Amino acid sequence: MTASPIQDESRLCVHSITTKPWTIEEAAKYYAREGVAGITVWQNALEGRDPKIVGRMLREEGLTVVSLCRGGFFPASDAKGRQKAIDDNRRIVEQAAALGAPLVVLVCGAVPKQPLSVSRQQIQDGIEAIRPEAEAAGVKLGIEPLHPMYADFRSAVNTLGQANTMAEQIGSPSVGVVVDVYHLWWDPDLESEIERCGWNRHLFAFHICDWRVPTEDLLTDRELMGQGCINVPEIRGWVESTGFNGFNEVEIFSTRYWGEDQLEFLRKIKRAYRSAS
Image (cartoon, rainbow, N blue to C red):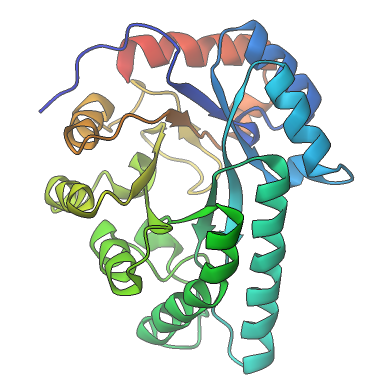
């Protein structure tokens, strides 16, 4: 199934990291002015700021705060490190609640010298440890599987199937998954695993961009939708077939685009969103 063309920006969200050179205040002003409806706030944008004040500012600009990115990085080779990660994530949940973000996106982490299965268990244990605080705060936790190229230390959760299984085992309506096309487009089981998300209604967020060909950097060389090899409309169709009607979140890490005029880049995002998402 391929989704119908996008008609407007009412479900367009842009991650603050996408326009990294802007402060959060600049991002709020220009996103609102250009008709962007939502914003996912990255933690670096909150440095030196009160998240409660930032959240109020974003809403006054007319933006919906979609999520806070990112928590996670639970695995560690010793108990002290794992406890520190849990404590850090509890603070991130508090930060999200103050910001007014209904979701924390979890980049789950890994330890290079321990088996991935051990890291995955530590991730599940960490999520279960912070779940009571998240539920009390009304903040959901979204497990984001990352491309296998990041399995060394960024994430031991590398397929949507792994994320689905973990969310199902935890069994809380506050714990679900995040689908990011950059990380998952290659997976032959992607359509069926997205359908599986719909069974438990635990698909919490949908991130979009494109895979540049040839890719020159595996972290900071993402592309605008329609400029690479990902069939974003097809994947969006699978996502929407689950009943998901949330934001389409543009998340682009790109040193090339960060070097451009950010207002013109934002306008390119809007054009790509309309034509190739």
